[in-house]
Picture (cartoon, rainbow, N blue to C red):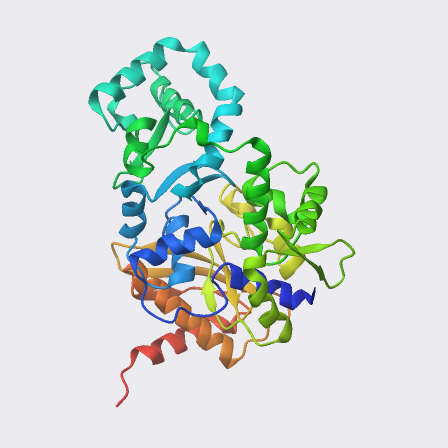
Length: 411
């Protein structure tokens, strides 16, 4: 099976649930279904627009109630752990990550061993009081706090979480982690679990590689390890072995000498894509931490889209803005926009919008982008839309006109 570059892009988007608009209003089960489809949902706390995990889900589901994600975590359908980064993970995959907790994490275990007083105090507090937030421990070391100056109890909580002794029971209204003992969380989330059920390291790597190929639609070996941050060494041989066993289907991507692979679950989808029966029709905004773009090298290779987030770049040196969102339009990444949701004012501000060189400003893209902005702004509870500037310059005025026309009721 051979894929053109366009078909490979379509496979990725279809595997991710981004090829076409949702056919019906979202339900709570769709949130869990979307996360299972992606494999993981990356967590980030920046909130100039909706925090990344909520925005990633909106891109796929359209308008939905963000509390559903919170509830799925609190109910035990999801758990938090390190995967591609800090992620929400379906609870049925707990064993894959428990193996990592048991076998690795030397840094956290070394810190735990070196700080028995802090560890004992924190564990005693959690055992006695139940669910615990870092804020429950007062600052006693005289430091000012902040991201790089965690108090000892916060460090203890995080190392215990990484080592698997604590889990995240839920998130509080400010999105802060709420910790509890592993056994208490698992008693409701995965009753009957015991560590003897954890797969071997080899089984973990095989399983996560298969999941990565499925989530990527069609993948060359170079793209696979980044998805779940598995080892790069030996990945080509592993995928060839899986293909030899029938666990993967061999494929090719136009212009690449290296073999590519498709998961058998996506075989029918691949036939539709290669035959041209499936054409992407979705226009939406993506989070900077969406699986489509979180591997910047893959985004450049597949979409010709050079992307970086400029949160940590000094304002004077930013090219596209603090928190630019990639724009997906009919199977292509056509630009990016720097947005901010002014929730108290009810305004969704587009500070700057940049189309990629060569993308024509026609009625189709203006109408589609205006619709995506209206939908995103309404979901944020900020129905007023302010488009400040654009490149090309005329696009901002065209978007403002399209948005205003849509707000005027037909006579």
